[in-house]
Length: 338
Image 1 (cartoon, rainbow, N blue to C red):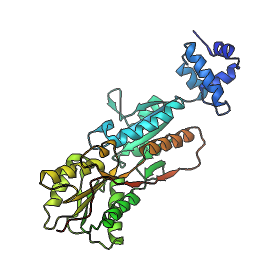
Image 2 (image 1 turned 90 degrees about the vertical axis):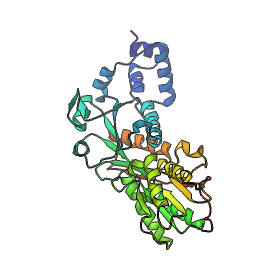
Image 3 (image 1 turned 180 degrees about the vertical axis):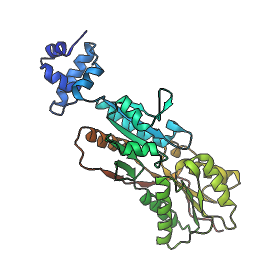
Image 4 (image 1 turned 60 degrees about the horizontal axis):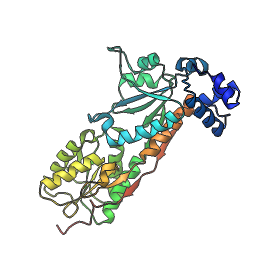
């Protein structure tokens, strides 16, 4: 079996340098590290995970706490894009990802106990229920965490500027001449949903526009089906809106389908703007105007912050707020003459 001493002899570096290269020490130059890793691969060297744990006091494993309410799970286009960018950074630094749950060996225990048993070095959190006592137990522990799309002083957090995105959406619709602007909300029980709804209300006030009775409709779980049902409610109002800001792209796509099924044209009869800029948004008809979140940057920065915290390099709990932007496509136009 090939050892680090064999690799040291082959490359000309000391066994200490070879060991540091495998464990991502910062005092090893990247060129040197790549040469050692390449030689190790050529020689068929497989680092012993248990030995690495004993040497570095790490498991080199990051827990992924992922619970969302749509039922789509990892297939949800926003979450899958963020997790993928997070994974790329973590794997490049030598970490593996492990999904964690409340169950261990078929028995319910809790997230914290699961993390202790698995020995994870840190946890990245995508969660729909932040009041879950099992989650709060994890949050109060000494395990480093970073949370996506949430705000708390107990953990590192990374999220887009949800309020600013809602402001941009309403302001864009207003710039087209819309005055009757409705909102399909992601729900006040979710942090991004509540923040975007607050941003919508603030923007309407700043524009001097009335939030009419029935113009805010809950789109549960950010799903396409709830977007469809919400749009049906808006279309049934005595004076229907000329434009709709949906709190997520799947909600917006459902809203567009509902409008079409009721004989309306988007955007000629009613404009729709979404939020997220999922990959599908640019391929539907009409292509969806939306608020773009930088999913690659969200995942990358979350990984960098968590890894720094694991290595003891973080200072306090970091709350990172990333900018968003309007992506103009084909689903919005000036209002008709009605």
